[in-house]
View 1 (tube, rainbow, N blue to C red):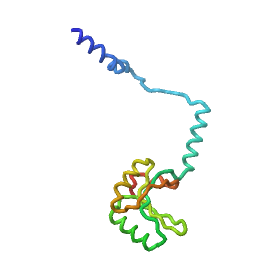
View 2: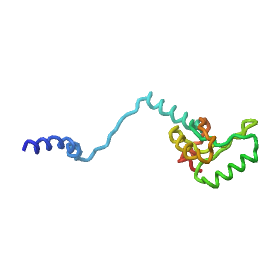
View 3: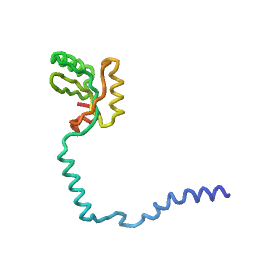
View 4: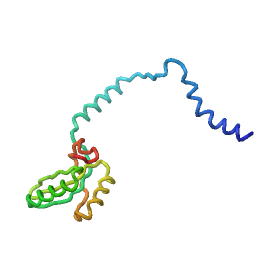
Length: 139
């Protein structure tokens, strides 16, 4: 009998909010202060102005040969059409980068996946990732 009362007392508070919500108006209302409204407007403007994000990519190739870059890029796209792929030219090097992640662990997972095929692959930080590229790193 004591166990039954103990269980009843344990579970009764879980159902109390359900019984307390009878009636017509269950909405919540609040009033923003001018300071909060100003901060929110500033936040929205800042985020609209930022068209690039910081994140991680896996660099799979760095070469001075443009034709080599094209070969590896075409081969990679044929093998992994679902992965985002970009290349950068910082004279004299062409760099081929795969994936686009905000989480370093996700980028490391891709690096480990690609390591058997691209042994020199390594992680790099990228400050110019477009938000659309982050959607699962799918083109």
